[in-house]
Amino acid sequence: MENIIINMNGEIFTNQDAKISVLDRGFLYGDSVYEVIRTYNGIPFLLDDHLKRLWHSASKIGLHIDLTPEQITQEINKTLAELEDENAYIRVVITRGEGPITLDPTTSEKNNVVVIVKPLPENPKQWYEKGVSVIIANVLRVDRLAVDPNIKSGNYLNNIMAVREAKNQGAFDAIMLNNEGYVTEGSTHNIWMIKNNTVFTPPLKAGILEGITRKAVLLLASQNKIAVEQRNITPDELINADEAFLTATTKEIVPITEIDNSYVKDGRPGHLTRKLMVIYKNYIKQLTSF
Image 1 (cartoon, rainbow, N blue to C red):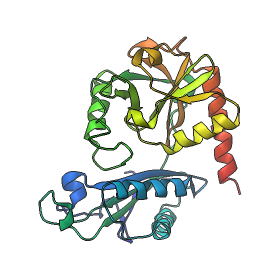
Image 2 (spheres, helix red, strand yellow):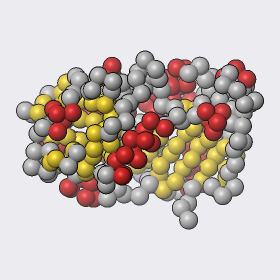
Image 3 (cartoon, one colour):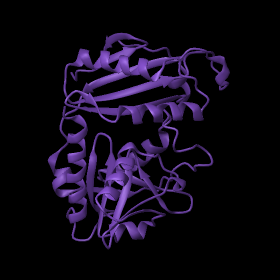
Image 4 (cartoon, rainbow, N blue to C red):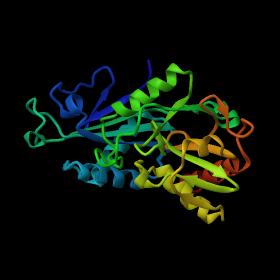
């Protein structure tokens, strides 16, 4: 069985022993926020950025977090110490807590704070050497005027349905469009394309989460004099791009070589994508080598 350590409100449990009330609003309504962080060499990577986004998500739904960022950091480190693994997956979940069965968010007064850690094995090398296949899902991204995509909440049914569609077609994952027909993001990652040596990614106003890895890649591209632009992308543009890739905390940069059963260019990871992969790897080493 997978080694999972769970910290619930400061108390350490194994995954067999950890329990949460069925009256918790995170369970009943997805009334929660969360972040996924990873470690390299035992060091939580870009932790400050993740915690800032956690607090931003909470503020957007009016959820007061009872602990401070420093206290959350202490709980993360305490939980990692129990795992004793240098490369770990960390999930921090803050729910609005328990209360009566009602949509009214004012009926709950105390958070449940959960930190889940588990070993993070190396991703399959073929993702990076050969790229992955994705589909453009029929499931649309929830409109940003309905639910702000920069709220990283526990309500993920929209994304789950897109992944289900992808898996039914034998694809690695799905890309979702917005109501205007533009590319937004994948189920748990940001989307990029390259055309004529310029890197493009959808803007926040398209209805996407401001990814932590996305933010880093935008900065690194600029620092390395790689042309980069945030603008709306159509599905046809993406399919006919010179290169495409996705970014995510636990996946880093993964080439996309097939979209809706059509190869991107020659169906192999492109030169500029591979260059960015190296740049990002060096960035990781720079921040985690002491």
